[in-house]
Length: 359
Image 1 (cartoon, rainbow, N blue to C red):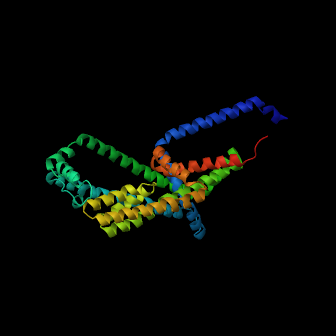
Image 2 (image 1 turned 135 degrees about the vertical axis):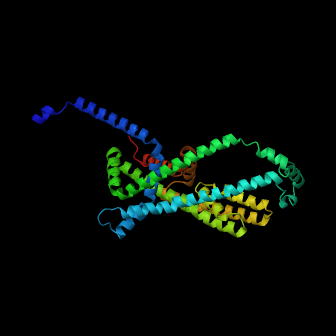
Image 3 (image 1 turned 90 degrees about the horizontal axis):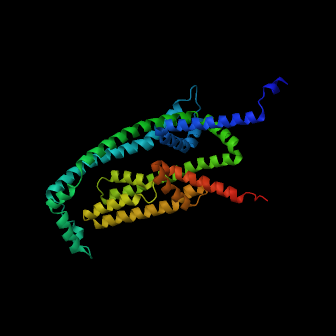
Protein backbone atom coordinates (compact mmCIF):
# COMPACT_ATOMS: atom_id res chain seq x y z
CA UNK A 1 0.00 0.00 0.00
CA UNK A 2 2.76 2.57 0.75
CA UNK A 3 4.34 1.71 -2.63
CA UNK A 4 1.10 2.57 -4.37
CA UNK A 5 1.08 5.95 -2.67
CA UNK A 6 4.53 6.85 -4.03
CA UNK A 7 3.87 5.41 -7.51
CA UNK A 8 3.15 8.23 -10.03
CA UNK A 9 -0.11 8.13 -11.96
CA UNK A 10 0.01 6.52 -15.44
CA UNK A 11 -0.06 9.86 -17.28
CA UNK A 12 2.82 11.24 -15.20
CA UNK A 13 4.88 8.07 -15.69
CA UNK A 14 4.38 8.25 -19.46
CA UNK A 15 5.39 11.92 -19.44
CA UNK A 16 8.53 11.03 -17.50
CA UNK A 17 9.42 8.33 -20.02
CA UNK A 18 8.97 10.75 -22.90
CA UNK A 19 11.07 13.38 -21.13
CA UNK A 20 13.79 10.84 -20.38
CA UNK A 21 13.82 9.69 -24.02
CA UNK A 22 14.04 13.29 -25.23
CA UNK A 23 16.91 13.94 -22.81
CA UNK A 24 18.72 10.85 -24.07
CA UNK A 25 18.30 11.90 -27.72
CA UNK A 26 19.50 15.42 -26.94
CA UNK A 27 22.57 14.14 -25.12
CA UNK A 28 23.29 11.68 -27.95
CA UNK A 29 23.08 14.51 -30.50
CA UNK A 30 25.36 16.66 -28.33
CA UNK A 31 27.85 13.81 -27.99
CA UNK A 32 27.84 13.28 -31.78
CA UNK A 33 28.43 17.00 -32.28
CA UNK A 34 31.35 16.98 -29.84
CA UNK A 35 32.91 13.93 -31.51
CA UNK A 36 32.15 14.91 -35.10
CA UNK A 37 35.83 15.36 -35.90
CA UNK A 38 36.56 11.81 -34.74
CA UNK A 39 33.47 9.96 -35.98
CA UNK A 40 35.30 8.68 -39.05
CA UNK A 41 38.15 7.46 -36.86
CA UNK A 42 35.64 5.62 -34.66
CA UNK A 43 34.01 4.04 -37.71
CA UNK A 44 37.44 2.95 -39.00
CA UNK A 45 38.27 1.40 -35.63
CA UNK A 46 34.96 -0.51 -35.66
CA UNK A 47 35.67 -1.74 -39.22
CA UNK A 48 39.14 -2.95 -38.24
CA UNK A 49 37.84 -4.57 -35.06
CA UNK A 50 35.07 -6.46 -36.88
CA UNK A 51 37.51 -7.56 -39.58
CA UNK A 52 40.08 -9.07 -37.19
CA UNK A 53 37.68 -10.22 -34.46
CA UNK A 54 37.42 -13.90 -35.52
CA UNK A 55 41.22 -14.20 -35.67
CA UNK A 56 41.52 -12.33 -32.37
CA UNK A 57 39.08 -14.73 -30.68
CA UNK A 58 41.07 -17.69 -32.01
CA UNK A 59 44.32 -16.20 -30.70
CA UNK A 60 42.75 -15.43 -27.33
CA UNK A 61 41.52 -19.02 -27.06
CA UNK A 62 44.93 -20.30 -28.11
CA UNK A 63 46.85 -18.07 -25.68
CA UNK A 64 44.60 -17.19 -22.74
CA UNK A 65 45.34 -13.91 -20.99
CA UNK A 66 46.98 -13.96 -17.59
CA UNK A 67 46.19 -11.03 -15.40
CA UNK A 68 45.41 -7.87 -17.37
CA UNK A 69 44.37 -8.52 -20.98
CA UNK A 70 46.72 -5.98 -22.57
CA UNK A 71 49.35 -7.86 -24.54
CA UNK A 72 47.09 -9.54 -27.14
CA UNK A 73 45.03 -6.42 -28.02
CA UNK A 74 48.27 -4.45 -28.28
CA UNK A 75 49.80 -7.06 -30.61
CA UNK A 76 46.73 -7.08 -32.87
CA UNK A 77 46.66 -3.27 -32.93
CA UNK A 78 50.33 -3.30 -33.91
CA UNK A 79 49.58 -5.89 -36.61
CA UNK A 80 46.80 -3.70 -38.06
CA UNK A 81 49.23 -0.79 -38.05
CA UNK A 82 51.87 -2.78 -39.91
CA UNK A 83 49.43 -4.28 -42.42
CA UNK A 84 47.34 -1.22 -43.26
CA UNK A 85 49.14 1.96 -42.26
CA UNK A 86 52.81 1.19 -42.88
CA UNK A 87 52.27 0.33 -46.58
CA UNK A 88 50.34 3.58 -47.05
CA UNK A 89 53.16 5.54 -45.41
CA UNK A 90 55.71 3.73 -47.58
CA UNK A 91 53.74 4.57 -50.73
CA UNK A 92 53.51 8.19 -49.58
CA UNK A 93 57.27 8.38 -49.04
CA UNK A 94 57.85 6.81 -52.45
CA UNK A 95 55.48 9.30 -54.04
CA UNK A 96 57.39 12.12 -52.35
CA UNK A 97 60.69 10.82 -53.70
CA UNK A 98 59.32 10.36 -57.18
CA UNK A 99 57.65 13.75 -56.97
CA UNK A 100 61.08 15.38 -56.70
CA UNK A 101 62.33 13.49 -59.76
CA UNK A 102 59.18 14.44 -61.66
CA UNK A 103 59.79 18.10 -60.84
CA UNK A 104 63.39 17.82 -62.07
CA UNK A 105 62.20 16.11 -65.24
CA UNK A 106 59.59 18.81 -65.81
CA UNK A 107 62.24 21.52 -65.43
CA UNK A 108 64.48 19.67 -67.89
CA UNK A 109 61.64 19.34 -70.39
CA UNK A 110 60.84 23.03 -69.91
CA UNK A 111 64.38 23.82 -71.00
CA UNK A 112 64.74 21.35 -73.87
CA UNK A 113 61.17 20.38 -74.83
CA UNK A 114 59.66 16.90 -74.98
CA UNK A 115 60.80 14.93 -78.04
CA UNK A 116 58.23 13.13 -80.14
CA UNK A 117 58.00 9.46 -79.00
CA UNK A 118 59.08 6.90 -81.54
CA UNK A 119 55.75 5.07 -81.63
CA UNK A 120 53.98 8.18 -83.00
CA UNK A 121 55.73 7.81 -86.37
CA UNK A 122 54.55 4.20 -86.70
CA UNK A 123 50.87 4.88 -86.03
CA UNK A 124 48.69 3.69 -88.93
CA UNK A 125 46.32 6.70 -88.65
CA UNK A 126 46.96 10.29 -87.60
CA UNK A 127 50.73 10.04 -87.37
CA UNK A 128 51.42 13.25 -89.29
CA UNK A 129 48.82 15.34 -87.47
CA UNK A 130 49.91 14.10 -84.02
CA UNK A 131 53.59 14.70 -84.87
CA UNK A 132 52.87 18.28 -85.96
CA UNK A 133 50.80 18.99 -82.83
CA UNK A 134 53.47 17.48 -80.57
CA UNK A 135 56.25 19.49 -82.19
CA UNK A 136 54.23 22.70 -82.03
CA UNK A 137 53.11 22.36 -78.39
CA UNK A 138 55.48 20.03 -76.53
CA UNK A 139 58.75 19.86 -78.45
CA UNK A 140 59.07 23.66 -78.60
CA UNK A 141 60.55 24.84 -75.25
CA UNK A 142 58.89 28.25 -75.55
CA UNK A 143 55.38 26.83 -75.96
CA UNK A 144 55.98 24.22 -73.27
CA UNK A 145 57.18 26.89 -70.84
CA UNK A 146 54.08 28.92 -71.60
CA UNK A 147 51.90 25.87 -70.92
CA UNK A 148 53.62 25.10 -67.61
CA UNK A 149 53.63 28.77 -66.66
CA UNK A 150 49.86 28.82 -66.54
CA UNK A 151 50.00 27.15 -63.13
CA UNK A 152 49.19 29.63 -60.39
CA UNK A 153 52.16 29.34 -58.02
CA UNK A 154 50.41 31.17 -55.18
CA UNK A 155 47.48 28.83 -55.42
CA UNK A 156 49.90 25.89 -55.49
CA UNK A 157 51.56 27.09 -52.28
CA UNK A 158 48.19 27.60 -50.60
CA UNK A 159 47.15 24.12 -51.66
CA UNK A 160 50.40 22.73 -50.25
CA UNK A 161 49.66 24.34 -46.88
CA UNK A 162 46.16 22.86 -46.84
CA UNK A 163 47.55 19.46 -47.73
CA UNK A 164 50.06 19.72 -44.88
CA UNK A 165 47.31 20.58 -42.42
CA UNK A 166 45.19 17.68 -43.63
CA UNK A 167 48.13 15.28 -43.33
CA UNK A 168 48.66 16.39 -39.72
CA UNK A 169 44.95 15.94 -38.97
CA UNK A 170 44.99 12.50 -40.58
CA UNK A 171 47.97 11.52 -38.45
CA UNK A 172 46.13 12.54 -35.26
CA UNK A 173 42.97 10.68 -36.27
CA UNK A 174 45.03 7.61 -37.19
CA UNK A 175 46.49 7.52 -33.69
CA UNK A 176 42.98 7.88 -32.26
CA UNK A 177 41.75 5.07 -34.55
CA UNK A 178 44.44 2.71 -33.26
CA UNK A 179 43.75 3.68 -29.65
CA UNK A 180 40.02 3.04 -30.12
CA UNK A 181 40.82 -0.27 -31.83
CA UNK A 182 42.88 -1.37 -28.83
CA UNK A 183 39.99 -0.77 -26.41
CA UNK A 184 37.44 -2.33 -28.77
CA UNK A 185 39.50 -5.51 -28.89
CA UNK A 186 40.17 -5.53 -25.17
CA UNK A 187 36.52 -5.00 -24.17
CA UNK A 188 34.93 -6.54 -27.27
CA UNK A 189 32.89 -9.17 -25.43
CA UNK A 190 31.39 -6.63 -23.05
CA UNK A 191 30.58 -4.16 -25.82
CA UNK A 192 29.11 -6.90 -28.03
CA UNK A 193 26.90 -8.19 -25.24
CA UNK A 194 25.62 -4.72 -24.38
CA UNK A 195 24.87 -3.92 -28.02
CA UNK A 196 23.07 -7.24 -28.49
CA UNK A 197 20.87 -6.63 -25.44
CA UNK A 198 20.16 -3.05 -26.47
CA UNK A 199 19.25 -3.97 -30.05
CA UNK A 200 17.11 -6.91 -28.93
CA UNK A 201 15.34 -4.75 -26.37
CA UNK A 202 14.66 -1.99 -28.88
CA UNK A 203 13.88 -3.97 -32.06
CA UNK A 204 13.35 -7.57 -30.99
CA UNK A 205 14.91 -10.68 -32.49
CA UNK A 206 14.77 -9.25 -36.02
CA UNK A 207 16.88 -6.31 -34.90
CA UNK A 208 19.50 -8.73 -33.57
CA UNK A 209 19.47 -10.54 -36.94
CA UNK A 210 19.98 -7.24 -38.77
CA UNK A 211 22.90 -6.40 -36.46
CA UNK A 212 24.49 -9.79 -37.21
CA UNK A 213 23.97 -9.18 -40.93
CA UNK A 214 25.77 -5.83 -40.63
CA UNK A 215 28.73 -7.50 -38.95
CA UNK A 216 28.92 -10.14 -41.68
CA UNK A 217 28.73 -7.45 -44.35
CA UNK A 218 31.66 -5.52 -42.88
CA UNK A 219 33.88 -8.60 -42.75
CA UNK A 220 32.93 -9.68 -46.26
CA UNK A 221 33.51 -6.18 -47.62
CA UNK A 222 36.96 -5.98 -46.01
CA UNK A 223 37.90 -9.34 -47.50
CA UNK A 224 36.41 -8.55 -50.89
CA UNK A 225 37.87 -5.06 -51.24
CA UNK A 226 41.10 -4.88 -49.25
CA UNK A 227 42.45 -8.41 -49.68
CA UNK A 228 41.40 -8.71 -53.32
CA UNK A 229 42.83 -5.23 -54.02
CA UNK A 230 46.16 -6.21 -52.49
CA UNK A 231 46.13 -9.37 -54.59
CA UNK A 232 45.49 -7.36 -57.74
CA UNK A 233 48.37 -5.03 -56.87
CA UNK A 234 50.75 -7.96 -56.37
CA UNK A 235 49.83 -9.75 -59.62
CA UNK A 236 49.82 -6.61 -61.77
CA UNK A 237 52.95 -5.41 -59.96
CA UNK A 238 54.77 -8.53 -61.16
CA UNK A 239 53.71 -7.54 -64.66
CA UNK A 240 55.13 -4.04 -64.10
CA UNK A 241 58.46 -5.53 -63.07
CA UNK A 242 58.64 -7.96 -65.98
CA UNK A 243 57.73 -5.37 -68.63
CA UNK A 244 60.11 -2.70 -67.33
CA UNK A 245 57.67 -0.13 -65.99
CA UNK A 246 59.64 2.60 -64.17
CA UNK A 247 59.32 2.33 -60.38
CA UNK A 248 57.24 -0.88 -60.38
CA UNK A 249 56.88 -0.94 -56.58
CA UNK A 250 55.26 2.49 -56.58
CA UNK A 251 52.90 1.54 -59.39
CA UNK A 252 52.04 -1.74 -57.67
CA UNK A 253 51.19 0.06 -54.42
CA UNK A 254 49.02 2.60 -56.22
CA UNK A 255 47.31 -0.23 -58.12
CA UNK A 256 46.52 -2.07 -54.88
CA UNK A 257 45.00 1.07 -53.34
CA UNK A 258 43.02 1.94 -56.48
CA UNK A 259 41.85 -1.67 -56.89
CA UNK A 260 39.98 -1.46 -53.59
CA UNK A 261 37.45 0.61 -55.54
CA UNK A 262 35.86 -1.38 -58.39
CA UNK A 263 37.17 -0.23 -61.77
CA UNK A 264 39.80 1.97 -60.06
CA UNK A 265 42.84 -0.10 -61.01
CA UNK A 266 42.56 0.62 -64.78
CA UNK A 267 43.45 4.25 -64.08
CA UNK A 268 46.84 3.17 -62.71
CA UNK A 269 47.83 0.36 -65.06
CA UNK A 270 46.48 2.41 -67.97
CA UNK A 271 48.86 5.22 -66.99
CA UNK A 272 51.70 2.68 -66.65
CA UNK A 273 50.94 1.41 -70.16
CA UNK A 274 50.98 5.00 -71.40
CA UNK A 275 54.42 5.51 -69.84
CA UNK A 276 55.70 2.43 -71.66
CA UNK A 277 54.09 3.64 -74.87
CA UNK A 278 55.87 6.99 -74.60
CA UNK A 279 59.12 5.06 -74.14
CA UNK A 280 58.38 3.32 -77.48
CA UNK A 281 57.72 -0.04 -75.77
CA UNK A 282 54.57 -0.89 -77.67
CA UNK A 283 54.60 -4.64 -76.92
CA UNK A 284 55.26 -4.07 -73.19
CA UNK A 285 52.47 -1.48 -73.01
CA UNK A 286 50.04 -3.88 -74.65
CA UNK A 287 51.11 -6.65 -72.26
CA UNK A 288 50.55 -4.46 -69.17
CA UNK A 289 47.18 -3.33 -70.47
CA UNK A 290 46.09 -6.89 -71.28
CA UNK A 291 47.28 -8.27 -67.93
CA UNK A 292 45.55 -5.49 -66.00
CA UNK A 293 42.27 -5.95 -67.87
CA UNK A 294 42.28 -9.71 -67.32
CA UNK A 295 43.13 -9.47 -63.61
CA UNK A 296 40.56 -6.75 -62.87
CA UNK A 297 37.89 -8.53 -64.93
CA UNK A 298 38.37 -11.76 -62.98
CA UNK A 299 38.54 -9.95 -59.63
CA UNK A 300 35.52 -7.67 -60.19
CA UNK A 301 33.25 -10.19 -61.91
CA UNK A 302 34.12 -13.48 -60.21
CA UNK A 303 36.15 -13.15 -57.01
CA UNK A 304 34.47 -10.15 -55.37
CA UNK A 305 30.88 -11.26 -56.09
CA UNK A 306 31.62 -14.62 -54.47
CA UNK A 307 33.30 -13.12 -51.39
CA UNK A 308 30.97 -10.16 -50.76
CA UNK A 309 27.71 -11.29 -52.33
CA UNK A 310 28.01 -14.84 -51.03
CA UNK A 311 28.49 -13.77 -47.42
CA UNK A 312 25.90 -10.99 -47.46
CA UNK A 313 23.38 -12.71 -49.79
CA UNK A 314 23.45 -9.48 -51.78
CA UNK A 315 23.43 -9.29 -55.60
CA UNK A 316 26.67 -7.83 -56.90
CA UNK A 317 24.81 -4.96 -58.56
CA UNK A 318 23.73 -3.74 -55.13
CA UNK A 319 27.25 -4.33 -53.78
CA UNK A 320 28.63 -2.19 -56.59
CA UNK A 321 26.04 0.55 -56.08
CA UNK A 322 26.71 0.53 -52.34
CA UNK A 323 30.47 0.82 -52.87
CA UNK A 324 30.35 3.59 -55.47
CA UNK A 325 27.57 5.51 -53.73
CA UNK A 326 29.28 5.13 -50.37
CA UNK A 327 32.58 6.46 -51.72
CA UNK A 328 30.85 9.42 -53.35
CA UNK A 329 28.94 10.26 -50.16
CA UNK A 330 31.33 9.40 -47.33
CA UNK A 331 34.76 9.12 -48.97
CA UNK A 332 37.00 6.10 -48.43
CA UNK A 333 35.05 4.92 -45.39
CA UNK A 334 32.04 4.65 -47.71
CA UNK A 335 33.70 1.56 -49.21
CA UNK A 336 32.50 -0.30 -46.12
CA UNK A 337 29.49 1.78 -45.05
CA UNK A 338 27.75 1.60 -48.43
CA UNK A 339 27.58 -2.21 -48.80
CA UNK A 340 26.52 -2.57 -45.15
CA UNK A 341 23.60 -0.15 -45.65
CA UNK A 342 22.56 -1.93 -48.86
CA UNK A 343 22.78 -5.31 -47.14
CA UNK A 344 20.59 -4.18 -44.22
CA UNK A 345 18.04 -2.62 -46.58
CA UNK A 346 17.81 -5.81 -48.64
CA UNK A 347 17.52 -7.88 -45.44
CA UNK A 348 14.66 -5.69 -44.18
CA UNK A 349 12.98 -5.88 -47.58
CA UNK A 350 13.19 -9.68 -47.63
CA UNK A 351 11.83 -9.93 -44.07
CA UNK A 352 8.91 -7.69 -44.99
CA UNK A 353 8.14 -9.47 -48.28
CA UNK A 354 8.51 -13.00 -46.89
CA UNK A 355 6.66 -12.23 -43.66
CA UNK A 356 2.99 -13.07 -43.01
CA UNK A 357 0.47 -10.89 -44.80
CA UNK A 358 -1.92 -9.19 -42.33
CA UNK A 359 -5.60 -9.86 -42.86
